[in-house]
Image (cartoon, rainbow, N blue to C red; front, top):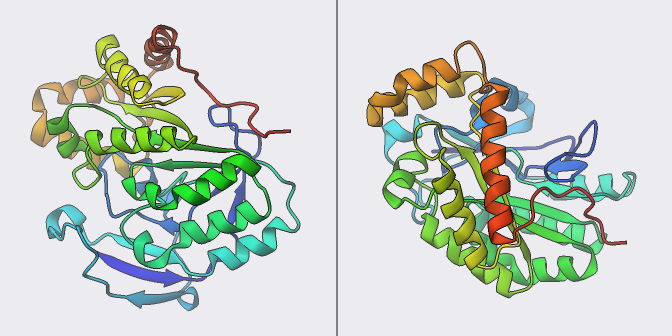
Amino acid sequence: MTYVQVRVRTALNQLKRRDSWYGCVYTLNPYRGCAYVCPYCYSWAEKWRPPYKKQDAKGLTLNAFSGEDKEKAALEAASIFIKSNIASVLQRELQRKSKDVVFIGSATEPYQPCEQRFELTRRCLTILHRARWPVELGTKSTLVLRDLDLLQEIASRASCIIFMTITTLNEQLARILEPRAPSPKERLAAVRALSEAGIEVCVCMIPVFPGLTDTPSEVMEVAKAAQEHGARRFLAGALTLPGKVKRRFLQVVRQHFPHILNLYRRIYDNRDYPPRSYEKRIEAYAATARSRTGLLGRVIDFIHQ
């Protein structure tokens, strides 16, 4: 794994309109790329990986983060970009931006292993907390618990929701689809710890995988586990395969699930998204699961007045 320090010109990405699922207006990504290298992740698509200018980048070779799998074939010479000045850029931007919800981790894992060393996510959270901006954070990592004290303070002064991705409770399946991420059991334990600390948690079964996890019982199983571990919200959404992501993920399907390869070819034939009828079916499964567990769904109005 190669780590590269870069200097960025902007920190906040302002959306054209408030996100209909998460209710955010801004997104922020302290890193680009992710050490978990989940084969289905849309951030591998070309639109999320534009080249940095040479004068903005300084190469680092860091080989000793604890717990990091160095299997060369799986890592595929991936690079993680460390946005070394993002906290100071964020500080300046908050002075001229209208206060609204910031989602941290829309296109990266904000608590991937290198966060232990660089602490960019914590530094950005600290700046947002001091300015009393509401925060949402998407993660698969149990490292989020390191910042429990700060998240509690943000929740008390503004608002804070953690979106924990759990795509399956099947440990064997998770090792294939998310081989370097914490296990589903570990993530559920983090959900409980966050909830018991008074932090609102939404469990995200995103994506749902055709032929693997796209049944009413699978969706209900994850929703029930979310409710039992203290989550307040539950979302489920269909798999998208933009750009190079389709080739990457279909290689995994071909290797581990060859019997459903043709299913994927039909669903994603000449398209990045499944048919709308399929998306509606997954949304209906999630709605049924929420009604049976008492969990809430999408976040629209979020800022505490």
